[in-house]
Length: 111
Image (cartoon, rainbow, N blue to C red; front, side):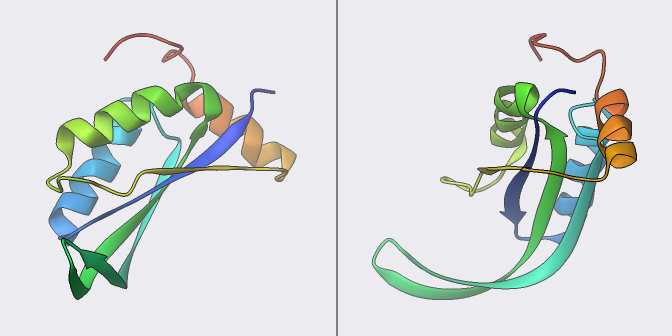
């Protein structure tokens, strides 16, 4: 079984979150993308901010991380988007098999 990871990113609109989720799954770069509304607190360019955002949790194979990152960067409106890869240490065998099968055929191909 290939290593599995979750990639996190956040965007400023539900429509963009849904579009990114759909595109990642249709491109078979992700088996599943969950999105949820969140409030983000951070400092940007010296200014303290609080923003409503939509967090995307992208379930994929670790071998696809570079392609997922490139895809997000190409479609993300922020200057410096959050893109974090979190390793998955363990998971239900049937789910991990489904995740692997759902992202097959993408390998290391260029986008």
